[in-house]
Picture (cartoon, rainbow, N blue to C red):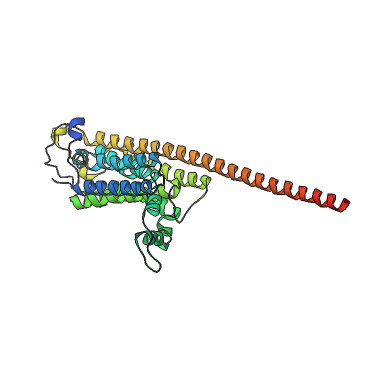
Length: 316
């Protein structure tokens, strides 16, 4: 296979759904997905065994997040993503925007903090190391919006509009590293915004929405730039296999449309989740305020009754 734009000899049949769902993906993503899903299930089972609860909705969300990764990277989509820009863009959008949101809604960090046993006094176990990492300067930097928003934007423009993309696509390790990068960028970008797991930055709900919308216009413009281009911009996809029967420019325009659409869909999902979290937070604060008012009212009533009793005793 020649990824440098001089012609590709990969002979793939026309893309169909049945072909696309065959295993043709990366074993590392498959093994990693199974291991992560197993660890999550172990954590939930550990809580249940000791009588604690763990929301089923979080389990479903996390499982769906792992499933989306497996669909993008552990099926025939991965093969076609090497020779079709539009399929690659589907992989990119799933890995960087859909999977991170679903994984974070599963609250894996919270589950780990609750499930991991505490080490003895003076010792450091996995739970203590995780707590130290969450409070480290490194985590404060990589989860700060000053870092996450530019990184989210640069992952598009600095990758696709420079020779870096063609260089990475020349080898399977390069392609794998790129996909791991997409997933990591999505996780650090959406982690402070989702606010489900504890982290160094816990901005208010309005600030989270501003962070969300700060990066999306650049993402949409990236898709529009691909849609409006009059010639192929990515050397890797300049000469698709003849067996696919596709035009490189039309495929690139389709990739731009996919990127543009995905800048809207995840934004709506995250916005709905934020509004729901905000509503639940207001409900909890209202209940706490009611309990405080009831307690204060009871204390005032008791004090007034004591005052009346003292007047009565003086009258006697």
